[in-house]
Image: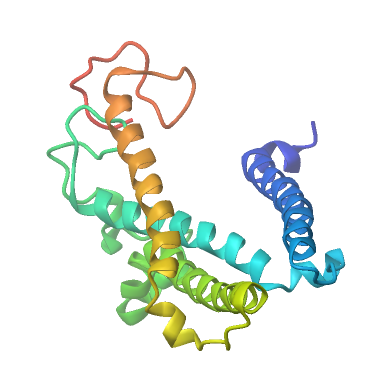
Length: 219
């Protein structure tokens, strides 16, 4: 196996699976949407046209929104909260890792650490900031796509006039879509936190070693 593939295999596997499933989602979503259009006697969309439709944008971004909210929130919460015995928690008596002290920076440390000041402040929180910014962008994408999809659906079913983005933001439909995803994401992470107390996965950094006690905290 070439070294660059071995060194990046985990990211390549995840992103490769993402692209495959995104394409499949678009194909099946396109077929489903055209079936819905046919029920109302509307002309079907081509696949490229479907990729720019509210139906597709809403479906994609409402899921991205929940994923990145969960990950951003999780990164922040694990910085301050602990769970005894969980591989997903830092040790109970650990506040900050010694490696986080900028006074221990070396020539190989990232440049914001060596620069100090505002670049360091931002860099110390850059992971959660990046995840939450992607969440915010996905939230907007969900809102815009959902507005377009809602207006099309209303036009097909009742000929109702379109509503604006802010009006759709105030609908129960929008928040129902968000909450059904948000709750499942936090349930999944909560389950991982608790299950990792007593269950193991050999060789995974997300699991404690097989031989350690249940009460040991942190991977």
